[in-house]
Image (cartoon, rainbow, N blue to C red; front, side):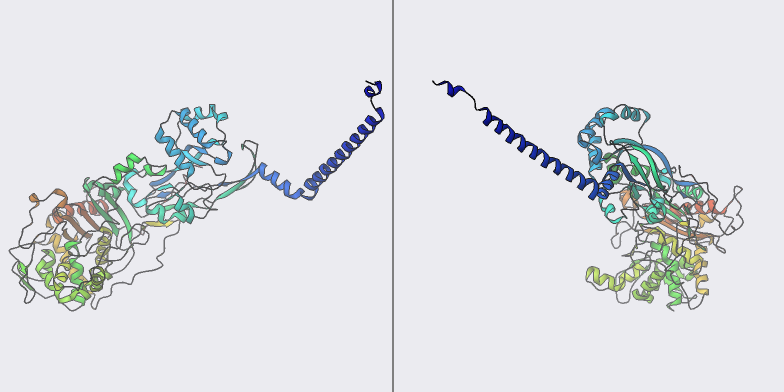
Length: 632
């Protein structure tokens, strides 16, 4: 082949290289210009925007939850406090793989599958972005040490110190004070998202729920500088929170203990009120429960034990328990009869042991099947004579009976600050027509006159009706709060007093109540023996199962839980009332024999000194001086 074929064209190669170098230089120049332009755009034109983003990555605003207000009894005994506790929290946004980290936490602490499931449930609950979610409370020193040693494996997992609600009296005030619990998704939607930032608990029941807005306080904030791992380096600015208001109650711990001892562990309820002020002195619903179990989350097993118990410890018998009031309402029926001109103080009724409506063969039995003969007003109350009250109820009629009983608070919510209170039931013609689409029958009026039939009342309503007898119709709503943040509660919707045609009508009914305890034929005369003060009371029984016409009540043939409830209401001293009491003992059968002695012990505990003598009348109550124990 010719040698020229193997010779290179150096000039052509040089031109090619120069073109490529020029193209590369132009490309590099263009890219450099683009880079400079981009840098100018980011650093000059969008300087404010990116400096803000950078600052947001470095500076965070963290909420400071307020300390919850404390709750005291009337003597300064603390009923609800805040106790320091170490909690384990997870921030999902800072965790690389939060589910894997939960697995590591369970492994590190030696926990089981149930705890792992509970942790995941808590993390998945509704929450705000970058908000730490507590998954475990009250860590031990060993658990804290294990987390600290393995902290490098757990980004987003931290041990934090928090104040947790604690109830030092445990089950003794569970049904009045209530408890707080973890905020659930429904509550998160209705709560103020700003004021509840960083707060994980809210009032669930009782006073904790009713006064939630006052007890919670106002959230604070702090701007903190953090590193790349989210650790706080320093605090730049701080706005302190406003703590919740302290709550001083009208309840008396000593009287509460006396009432519980008097009830003696039986299923039932006791409520005591100061008639002239409406202050609730004691609230006992037995059996009870420890509210501390609910604060940080109760176990499924323990909750099942409480909720499925046949004794219903979670049920507030004082505020929600509905029972036929029985003969305890007879003094109020007498007041209604006198004021409505259905009877006079001299009215007498002959009792052969039963009552019959005109032209009706059915016999409405008196509890004393042999009858009491001629019965006047005083003896009717003292003996709790059903025949007298059948006749009185028939003369009054359902319309007037409903009207007067409603004025005593039956069928309505009577308390000022009780969240769980049930209105009960005071039946009427209209109610029966709506409920059953039936007319009202005269016989139903008769049994309503002795507190049976459709009528249902709570022990709180019975105590308030008794207080109204003590004050001659002066309406003061019963309340549990003595002061909220040092300010007494105000009734913005007061109930009108019960005005009668003649104020002396009160005296006739009140004298009959005294005869119940101190009269020679009174049904509860035993509890009045040896008393240094006069007691006005009324016993009652409430049927649990109906007894057929002509049959006689035989407790031996009934299961224990099918036996009658025992009730007793009273106030004392009769001439200057300082306390009104309502007692209900489930399946106790005898109002005077079982519930009456409980009421006497409660009144003794309030009225007598250590020597058994009547105490001097109390001076106007003042809020006790308490020590701020917020756990700061």
